[in-house]
Amino acid sequence: MSLSVLTRLYETICRRRDADPASSYVASLFAKGTKKIAQKVGEEATETIVASASGDKREIIAESADLLFHLMVLWAAHNITPEEISVEFERREGTSGIEEKNSRK
Image (cartoon, rainbow, N blue to C red):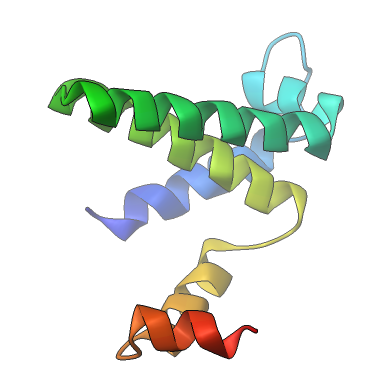
């Protein structure tokens, strides 16, 4: 996956945050607040899980894209950039998942 498409998507989300909610889905999410945005992330996560259970690759891809989109809206709502997420991944690189999880306790 090209990270540039994710960067462009995030930039588009940020540009649309203050648009007219009647003409922009992103603006309508921001107008409803972070609680609604977080709820949408949860809904899309559930839909991704259901798609995974079905085993339908196309459905898993579509729902995963929806999940990433709404997650990026949530990041933007909290002024978190994809670069900050990338730094966190880099910090964790080479560390076992078990070790990393235990370090958060």
